[in-house]
Amino acid sequence: MRQYIIAIGLAVFSLSAAAQTNPNPDEPCGIFAPNAFTPNGDFTNDEFRVLVSSACDPVDFHLSVYDRYGRMVFESIETTKAWDGKYNGRMVKDGVYIWHLVANYLDPDGINATRLEDKGSVTLYR
Image (cartoon, rainbow, N blue to C red; front, side):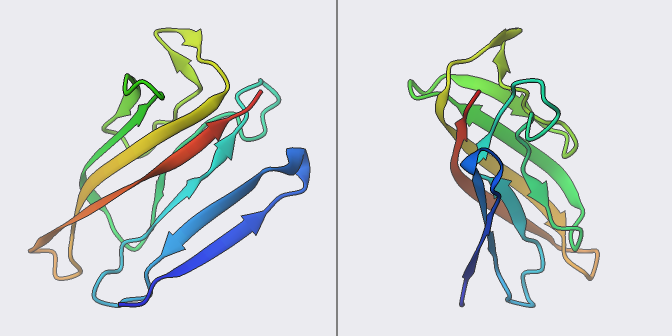
């Protein structure tokens, strides 16, 4: 199986985002996760979310984000919910956070479920 890494750069705030995609037609579900976000209220990159390819429709979804001490600072079972950089209503510190995604989606035949699991890091800047 070959995997490609696609890097997308933005000149704003010198941030970039990276995504991995798998061109294997037997595994149509891919994800995109930015590697940085800036929850500073300027309406640009204010939230972190992991996007699942429109080629799949997750039947269940679980995203969790952890700080450097292993404390879970965000959790969601909804594909549309994003992390705003807060934990218990308070802004967390700038730094690197680890995310972990587990999702199950139906294969194109609509019968069999396939597990999608990935993890990575995201840097929070203000």
